[in-house]
Length: 382
Ligand SMILES: Nc1ncnc2c1ncn2[C@@H]1O[C@H](COP(=O)(O)OP(=O)(O)O)[C@@H](O)[C@H]1O
Ligand SMILES: N[C@@H](CCC(=O)OP(=O)(O)O)C(=O)O
View (tube, rainbow, N blue to C red):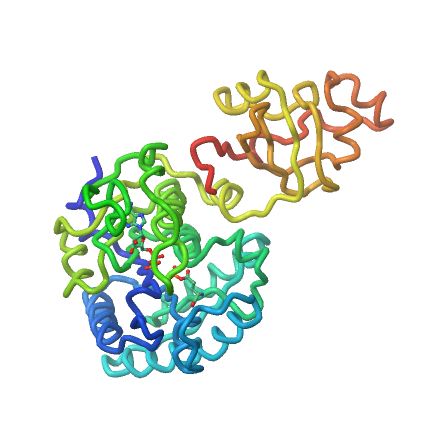
């Protein structure tokens, strides 16, 4: 059984730091905190671990420099703050890592870089090349171009860090925030909340523990951290949420000490392509299915045939990614369709041998083949 004793063996470690620990309440950078963080990361690298840093704080740092006291509401203003702040953040990281003789690289990603498989593979190759060169990649969302609609689908940097961890087949993802880890309820609101040291399975009860957003400067609170945990554990990556201001938090975690909340990785993680289907890809439409088809796909590992389809939404083409929706409205699977939306509407409910008569061509039997399909039931993220 995976446990804390396995953490020292983690070779590739992704560390995400939230705005709440990188900036003061004033919005300006918390320099002491950044120095401590960089020192620990440099030490991890010196110990032979491969380190990737996912950093928030661009909007916060920009606010500080522009003298704004509240996080702006409009998207262009937030993006303007990020454009000012990202340079300030990188300048500090470059300076601090250089003191320990380490080279850093800025990598800015958007949701689309994960949704398009070619870009996803390219981003992975670049990160591999940087790690081979002993460079520390410093990743943030490309806020100036990530429009709100797309941002919402990304969630925030918690989700981004988990997608990155899956992309590079990381061993451990550490989310450093302003609280010790997961509690049974938000302890800032509920004084009876108890600390949860380890989560072996992310059940609906665990999900219910994470309520709403956190601080004025941070964005997602615990809810987005649990979404990140779902992606990480299904990708075979262990995850720890811990307080970033704790002195030597990273060293203690890497030594296997009981610090923060540990999320145990799945013993049979999704393979690379199915992982991308589940978490990276963006769906172009929805195919509705009946209860029998849902059972065959989820429990039987079967392909989706026309006879189990009850409807199609959207204008997808053959080769597009589609969400497969059960009668209770849940996305039970996601996969690549071999028929367009128009064709699906014409062959739905029919037997395979009738496809030729309806479409005038002899097509394949499977609307979505099981090789190109991933079951989402337990993996639904948001
Ligand atoms: N069940 C919970 N356990 C711990 N913290 C919680 C819980 N529910 C909500 N929170 C809030 O989540 C906050 C951390 O999230 P956030 O402010 O987004 O940090 P970050 O900027 O590091 O991403 C905590 O300060 C706390 O107020
Ligand atoms: N890209 C944004 C980060 C937004 C975000 O996810 O913030 P947080 O919840 O503090 O991790 C920034 O750099 O300000």
